[in-house]
Length: 74
Picture 1 (cartoon, rainbow, N blue to C red):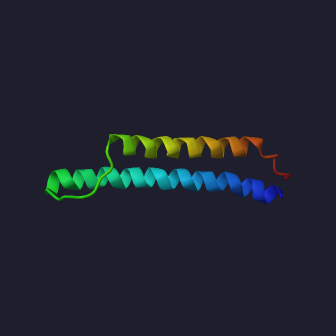
Picture 2: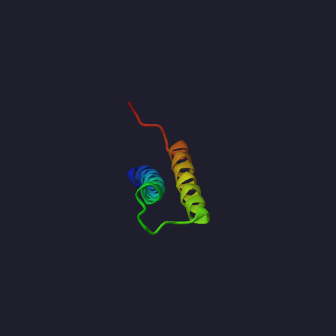
């Protein structure tokens, strides 16, 4: 059961990485649209805020899961 708890923290870190990568791709899409004149679907300000907020909340949840994990035996 200890490995399942340890992996649950890792899941939140992966979620955080996924949301922050999605934010980065959205920013790059906006940059491409501005410089090249492309018409690309983008999230608005609220969508970008929610991506970053959920990414940060997932990262903090992963940190809390690691903090509650018992120390490994050497």
